[in-house]
Amino acid sequence: MRTEMRQLLTPRMIQSMEILQLPLMALEERIEQELQNNPVLEQREGSDDGEQNDADGEPTATATIDVPTRDRDLPEAQQQFTEEETPMVVRDNDSQAEDFDRLAKLADYLENEEWGADNYRSHSSQFDGERDKKQDAMSNTAARGESLAEYLLGQWAFAECSEGVRRAGEAIINHLEDTGYLKTSFETIQVESKTPLSIEDLYAALAMVQELEPSGIAARTPEECLILQLNALENEGGEMAEGHDFALERGLVAHHLKDLEMNRYPLIARKLECPIDAIKTAVKSLARLSPHPGREIGGEPPPSITPDATVFFDEETGKYAIRMTRDYGSNLYISGLYRKMLKEKTVDRKTREFLSNNVRNARWLLESIEQRSSTIQRVIRAVVDAQQEFFEKGPESLKPLPMIGVADQLGIHVATVSRAVSEKWIQTPRGIYPLRRFFSGGTQNSEGEDMSWDAVKEKLRIIIDHEDKMAPLSDDDIVLKLKEQGIELARRTVAKYRKILNIPTARQRREY
Image 1 (tube, rainbow, N blue to C red):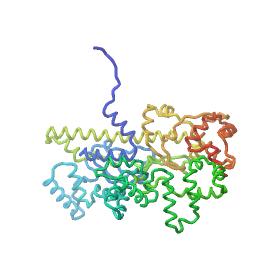
Image 2: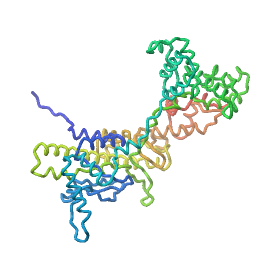
Image 3: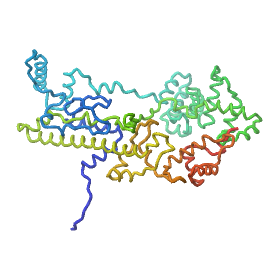
Image 4: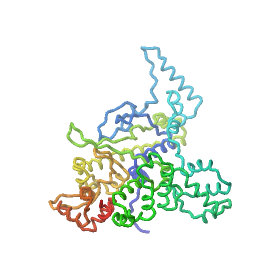
């Protein structure tokens, strides 16, 4: 036996860290899951225009950085009823028709339904004439797009061929990659097929599948893919075929694709005995072809980005202000109905324990969401104060900002800052950027000014954009250009940054 000290994370701390790290869309899914699992947690309908509601459902004006008030912080008298639970009041100045209608609905509910949050929400929606939110969400969700295989099989069903060729064509289509290429050998297709397929049928089927739309499908190499598209254009004719020198373009694809990649125009001109201008025209025509025709059909849409906050210039204060995009916690509350049940002495012990656990879990969730919003706002405020020149002048003015410096400034752990910026985005006057973009190391120029590595990369890109394309700068020349601006870098560092920015070498950038 021995005495020792250990640092342990409570479930509440773990939940708080998980909530902090979640991006907006994941947080929305987490809240929806909690609403389904926790009967005491409720959500009121609210607007997303920055107006927030207090615990009684009344709108309250909030500043862009203020943390919304929770119903647990209000007096006990204000916690008794929520927006959906208006107290019964008999008026003296009218016929009290509305009060008696609500009383009849409540009596009917108590007689026929059990005390459950799901039933309560559904009947409240029916009473108020509201639509089912889940049904609306399902109706507004876009249907799954047609896949490449489904699209091609729909065309293949009308092909006129023998039964063996039809089965071979279906097998080929099912083995196509998402890019549209056929990388599987015929021997493998034969082995994996449930029905016997002959090599002759596979070759015949491949020729027919390659005639389907989009053109270039079922190619085995990039050269074959481009040639299939050229053949389809030539056979179709019309406006799309105008301006094409199909013989020259086929020769470039079949024999000089690597030379085109390395920008060896003079060598190609000597071998083909044609002027460089004709080659450049043919290359422009080839650029309109698709190297991955399969991606034109189906595929998953790119993920949408929802910024956590918007940074804008406030003309009244003359400073940059922050407005949080959404505050999910402002529309969440603990049902007053269950809070009242928890206080009633007639409720049995098991029910009281069940409600007590769920109320505690709901409060933990609300506090975690509030802490997440507050931490992210504080981190964004520190970023805005440190990177003001970025918002005014652009990426070349980005300053080095280590996370440990922000953590010391805010009095939190550096791991908390890392979780706060993970997969978070902010909308700025210069576009939408990931919050992590503003955290990086850097260097100093000859004048002693701090510059982040991203700012150095931006200056390198600007230098290359303004170079003479007939005589592009080498990496050594770029080193000298940066030195003229007070930035000293090694040639290998310039080459590394150039590759990160997807900028080709000087030979490949040269224009003839």
